[in-house]
Structures are given as structure tokens and as C-alpha cells.
Amino acid sequence: MAKQIVNGIFVYSRHSAKCPQAKDPGYVKCRCRKWLQYQKDGKTIQKSAKTRFMEQAKLAAEKLSRGEPDAGSAGKGTLAGKTIESAVSKWLEVRTAEGIRANTKAKFIGATLVKWAREQKPSITYLHEITTPVGTEFFIAMSKHYAKETSGSFKIHWAMIRSFFKFAVEQGMLKENPLPKRKIKFEKPEVVPPSRAEVERVLEAAEGTTKLFLKVARHTGMAIQDCVTLDRVRLVGTLVRGNRVKTKKTSKRGCYRVRIPQDVADAVLALPGERYFFWDEKAMKLSNAVHLWRKNSMKVFKAAGVDMTPHDWRHFFITEKLSKGMRLELVSKLVGTSADEIKETYEHWIQDTEDLLDEAQSQDFLAQGLDEQGNEVKPTVQ
Image 1 (spheres, rainbow, N blue to C red):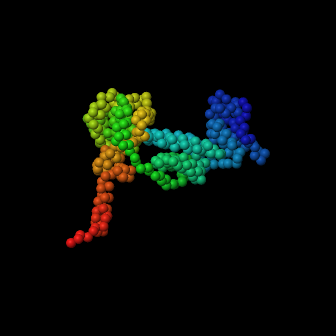
Image 2 (cartoon, rainbow, N blue to C red):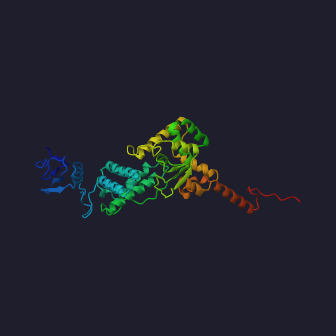
Image 3 (tube, rainbow, N blue to C red):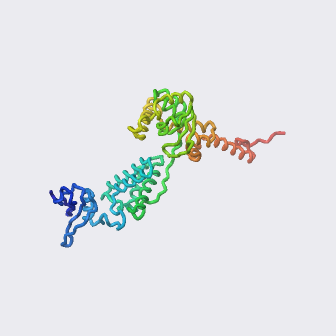
């Protein structure tokens, strides 16, 4: 077989005795250990590439030809030379073993890091190559990617990738976390829920099970994942009680408790299966089921000519209750979100706050000798 030469460095295999290609060191498609051979000061040097994969051996040869440290230079007694991709895989494997089922964000940010590292010039393969300056460059790249975001995605994903590097340090892959600590701020857009007229148009445009699904969302304010996984245990009579799927917030009696109209409850209870809108959990992942119902909902929104998303049902439900004067603590119990978070997001819809502000200002005006509207009080003519 032709020799594998990279920048003047011969890449070859040190085969195991059982390898079918044991007599051909130039054969590199097997999973035997890869070595590098080159000339230095008139001497032949042989060095382990510290990998069984040809692609990584080529990268090691390229780095060696440029005079860069080899994969094992990060120090003995550690998992030096661990590739970024293999480290991310191990991290996800451990998260799963720990019972963490919500790995969507972790998988996304892990894949983002691997892809970004590969695209650098020269490419970054090994974990120990990510120094603090390199971590700063990754932070800058992410900040540009999320520049137009109005959500907390950047903040969440940055915290997630820092947790990956914390794991790498704990496992001895790195001496310290190379990612810089950064405070990430973003402006939350003001919540503008759909109007009652728009809600009615949407429900009029919907049909069949999709219409029933949208009615459940409208009358409960449940997030789409909670609607999709609604089951018989959580619906008793007209009462829906359960825990949030997305936030993993749990309580023995359920972190939210809300009633739906009798006709909606009867229609839902008449549906077959244990989970009314998620029929075959073995054949379909939850993420796929959520995507399906999001797609169905968006079709109805478009047909009704209403610009909204499935999450806007939650906004509509919460603002509807607050604007009617329902106490913050009660709304919190209805939807399973903390009172503090509701206050921060929906404060301009809280009727109690508006009334208290008006009352406080009126009292302030009276204390200044003005009337309740702040007008100067004309003296009474005797």
C-alpha cells in the first residue's frame, strides 16, 4: 500500500497481532495505533500519534510539521489529547446516566463548539487546545450569532457550555476552565398577547382534534409540551393538575392547577388513549410530537390571518387573568410559574399594580395641597 506522508511525515500503523493487515504498516484504515516517523538532525524519529484514527493522525502530523505541541503535551496523569468531540460525547453520556433527560440544549451547544473548532484556521481538534484566548474567541462568535435574539438563549447556552468545561476539569481532561466568565444581558421584549377577537378568529378557523388542542391551550395557558403530554391522570372532571415538562418543576400535588370548561373537558375525555394528543410514545419522540402540533397550530394561525405562536396562548391566558384583577399568587398557581417571574414579565398587565400606583399618586397630590388629579385647588369664595 502507498505510504501516507503528511508534510514530510510518514504516518503508519503499529498493528496488533490479530489485525488482518499486520504485515503492512502503511495500511491505516484499521483501528490499530497510529505512529509518526520523520527525520530530525539526521536521525529517524518515531513518535506515537496518540490515536487509532487516520484523520486525527494526519492532524497530529500537520501540527508536528508546524512545530506545535503534540497531543500529549498537556501533561501526564490526565486525559491529555482528548478530542473535543469525544469529550462532548462523554459529557452527554454522563448526563444521560445521571437521569438528565432534557439534553437537547446540551447536544446543540456541544455540536456548536465542535463545528466552530473545526472551522478555525488552523482547525482545533483537541480539548487542551482551547485556551482562555481561544475561549474568548468562541464567546465573541456566539455573541455575534445571538446578536438579534431577544430571548435568553445566549445566556442559557453559554452557561451550558461552561458546565461542559467544568465537567472536563473534574474528569482530569483540563487543568482549568478556559471559558471566560461573562455577564450576558438581553432585553426582554414587552409581551403583546393576541386580542380576544384574534383568539376567536383562530378557534373559528380550526377543525377537529386541532381545534380541541387549541381550546385546551386557550383555557389553561399550558405550554405546548404540557398540552401534548396531557393524560388521563392529570385531567379529572374539569380539573387539570400537573407538573411542567420544560422546567422540570414538580410538586406532589402538581405545580399548576386549572379548570377548563365542561364541554372542552368532555371532548378531551372522549379521545382514545392514555395521552390525548401524543398517541405512540414508543414510535415518536416527544420533540417530534411537539413539532407536529406546533406545525398544525401555525397552519391554523396562518389561515385565520393572525400573527401568533403556540406560546402566545400562555401569554393570552396570563394577561387575561391579570387584567381582570386576579391576584398574582393565584395566577402563579394556575400556570405553574413563580409569582416573581410573572411579575417581571407581565407587570404592565397587573391591575393591582396599576390601581396602587394611581392611589399612591393621588395621595401624593393631596399631600401637596392639590386635588387627586394634581390640579391646583382654587380657594373657596366666602
